[in-house]
Figure: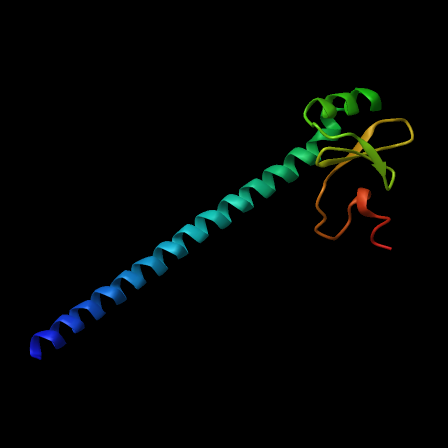
Length: 118
C-alpha cells in the first residue's frame, strides 16, 4: 500500500512537471509567433507605402502589367481601385499610382475601401 502511494505521488509530480513544461513551451512559441506576425505586418506596410514612389515614372498600364505578372487571378475594378491578386491599386486622374491596399481590411482610412465604409 505504501509503495502504491509513493508511486502515485511520483507520477503526480512528474505529470505536473510535464504540464508545466508544456505550458511554458507553448508560451514561448506563442511569443515568437506574435513577433513574427508583427514583423511581417510592418514589412507589408513598408512595402505597400513605398510602392507608389517606386512606380512614380510608370504608367497605369505598366504598373498593372507588372502586378499581373505575380498573380494568377484576373484583374478587376472595384471602388475605383484595380485589384490584381491580393493587391488593390489606386491611381489618380493622371494614371499615377497613389496607394496600394491589401485584399483584407483592418478598418481605418484606406482608399480602396472608402465606399465600403459608408
